[in-house]
Length: 482
Image (cartoon, rainbow, N blue to C red; front, side, top):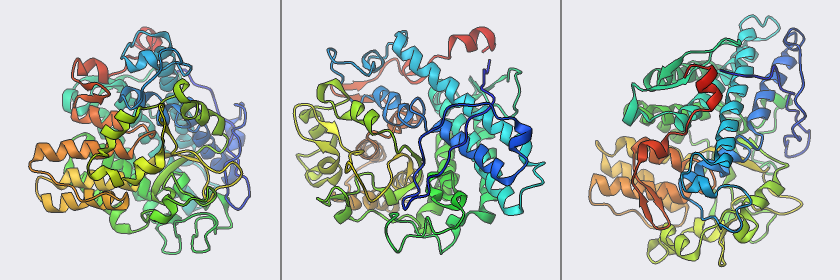
């Protein structure tokens, strides 16, 4: 049973040098007939969906820095200081009230955003007020959003393709209606995801400003950067939206999830070969001036959720010592292999604050200004290299290793040495763990590969089927016939 709010308040852009998103406004009722009478109304409707997704209980915090990383055992949690209510989740106690509340809110929030997306899509084909460019851009992003959101519902609440492609999974909702959408199996949901993404790719290929040579990715204050040069705010900061290359990246993710390495490689290479997203200069990564330091590796982000007002939330998650999410020195040394080649790893040096309770500093920044806006990463360049490596290793191991080494080189680490396909996959997962701390992606990788999760005391091997599939909300089972 999908229970939806009719519409969300639009996300409004603040006209500043950084073009930051403003604070999210309260939820309101907006008559569709009025909203979709102007092109600006369509833009506001689409921005409203990004607003919903950027809230703390979705990608603004929970799905990026929270529950998926806790389930991947990236963090230690003090039993006497569990103020974020993650302890039982880290123990896979799926009957815990706090866990149930978090995962049910995620389910409801994602389907709420999908409902509003479908309302927009329901009107866009009859949107006579839209120019051809506006139509392709708005519909392309809306289709991509629908696929992106369903994919994360699938990766959380259904078996992986590897272990249960024919198993009943989730509803793929394509209409704005109060009718219950039947459940589809994993393979069917993935086909629908791929269709929406490929349709979005076709539409965006015609019009997305990010494809232009004149659109130069960079920091807002750099004269060479051209991300905010458009006089139209809607066409600026394309990396804060599901742009053409982000759609390619999501296609690479989805194809790899279903084992189609040919198409996964093709889409990952389209991003890599575009040369649109430069590796962050090490001088910027390690810059001692907090105003110029780039811990987030901003230029490498294909897509990110703007979260300009969430500093206090991030402090609660990572800045309260043993009362927040943390790791120990031994765990940090093990993950980053500091006794060997990892001793030079800039991620370990720049992302973690030494001490008894080592906290993540990836989101730390100057209190007053920073060279880039505060965002929650949704997809980054390094993931495309990892996907390319995994997709090509069987046919071309030398090239596959070069993809991994490109990331390692950017992070100050020596080249990778492997002796077998199994060794390669073990090392690739280790590399992803180092790269995606605080970004919510590692749990999905473990699940896709059906690999035991590596925790502080070893590998959690069983029961993987129950660990990897979050239970559906009870009201979905009772009223939705799931």
